[in-house]
Length: 486
Image 1 (cartoon, one colour):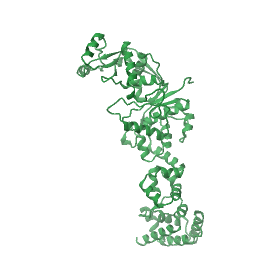
Image 2: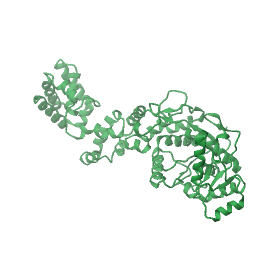
Image 3: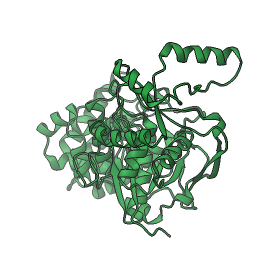
Image 4: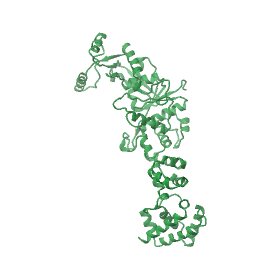
């Protein structure tokens, strides 16, 4: 049972776009916070001044907002634990650094790059793992002041134990042991005064009262160093939960060569945010059954760290696309039209046709597209004359000896149908098939090809009703002329 208020954070480094691995981490934190009526904090770890950018920060914020993962504290929201950008928290870090040095838990190190390189060479020649020798560890205060007065810019190193073990109590992986003998006096502040990642993250999590750190598995190896910093500062660490990696289908590290990997790319490729959120939730988490589709509210109700797998999750773009198609099929046509409104073809068609006409076309094709980007092509034959017929369809339906007779009969049907509505058109077409002693399909398939240029479409009779009598007649006549020219 969790007794204190849950406070979790998503703390990306704004050095690139919002990767789906980061988005999943954010989602798991968000779900955990909402499940326990807690607080979800967004913190930007932008102390890498060379690689961090405002563009990346804006992209991360935009990506989270698009996914619907609203934060309770953070950039653009504020909160009583700010600032929420590490680049604005330097005075906070200095206070804790000075405390560690004053308490003898950390020390100034003046070793030059050349001296450190010599140590590394000696370790390499001796075929042993490199550890900093600690040569500056026992400098007296007078020696330190002398070097500082000379204008030397030291790093700050923490005093690490040289024996014993560190046990990380992980809520997903259980107890994980690390041997201190492998740890040296690592740097916690660089010579320019900026803290290193391991120090800053501890200070931030502690000063923001973070109770649970849910993050990627790759950070597990950093945890012993962070626990040492907590101990040296006399602070109580949060609970840790390290989520397994997302692997490519070939079980290699997921990269650009496997397709889209960022939230922005999925958005640009026509995926819906709710589909991506639903899919990401299933990458490493399971409720215990084979259910695929979940709303956010349902995920909040069922989410639990105990149901997160220790095994890597495998990225499957085909499943995501299938799920996205299901969401598109259930989406309101008004929303779909709004989402594709910036497409150049849609803009042009919106100027040529009534909005209701386009909405009706979307209602017909919505269940047949897998991404938003497929929509313009899917409704093109409702808005443009047929430029070409499907080659296989031509061979199968237009090259038959009776193709012209069939389409000519359909032209008469179009002209004589009293009410041009789907139900009546279907009744008349099936009756015409009986008169011609043909199967209904022998009329339906060539009609579909003539009216859409395609062999695979939504219901033919609904298409005919929407196209209207005049365009159906013209397209059937065009198809007859085409066949006669074969």
